Length: 112
Length: 116
Image 1 (tube, chains in turn orange, cyan):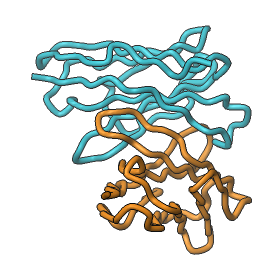
Image 2: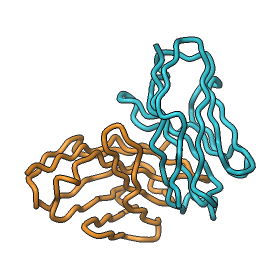
Image 3: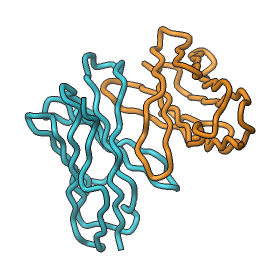
């Protein structure tokens, strides 16, 4: 059974800092890994999807990496801004179909 | 292109009642999945529908059911509501070009269900 863990659970940083969010998964036989952000009371916004054959994906100030052998993914956010404040979730696809197993999330606060 | 829409956005029900939630996927998307989000359990997979057939199912009791229509719109139903069913119910759609989960999933805003 796939289990996904995110550390830390909460993080507070000053504006402009570069930061890394961590995601660990127990079953390395994943198809893909997807990163989302969730604003309070809202749905999920997809940030990046990394295919199992890829090592990383980039979008603007975001860079996500995937290391299947160690069961880890990281989300790097460059030059953080107050608008980046949200909960960040990683989710792994395992098995057929579109079933996602979500991590516990990291609540990020970027302060002025 | 319009995003995933869910109706209603908020619902208040009492124990024992039943409820139906609706999800309209992005145009052209064939797969619709449902998730339950609670503070204690986080996001948990309920089920996935593809071409009007349930393709995957999570570990939820039979009180939770769903269906998908020929236009890919989906509904989920919860019967005999319990206090613990209070949650944010999220729907996600994807193109589902392959069966291996290679497609990005796009989520709707969710339906907030409160059971009193």
